[in-house]
Length: 134
Image 1 (tube, rainbow, N blue to C red):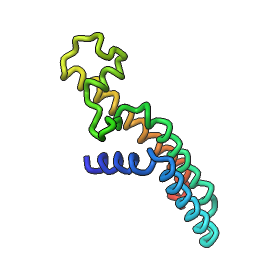
Image 2 (cartoon, rainbow, N blue to C red):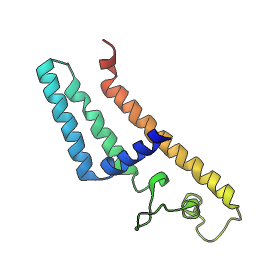
Image 3 (cartoon, one colour):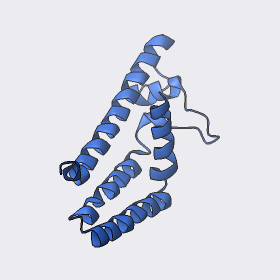
């Protein structure tokens, strides 16, 4: 649970802000470039491009993924609002109980979190995985 909260905070603070994302990615790339140059580690700089891919992914999902949406005052959007967005019913329909709404919203949020996590892990393995096999 602590890792999930840390991961979510990290994504929100770094990757949902284009300037911070660019700065973070640039730092990783410059660091990778110097490590490759000094230590003669092949392809380390080109692998740092995986971080840019991840940053682009998160910038693209920041307005469509429900797991992190907040009100302008910074509070969570809430189950009812997220349920309305997911089902497309808004205030016009459905007679689901609050617990049914929560189940639907949590399932969608869980899929989004797992999907983003799998994309990040896959991209990192693709970019840096060969360095684990020496």
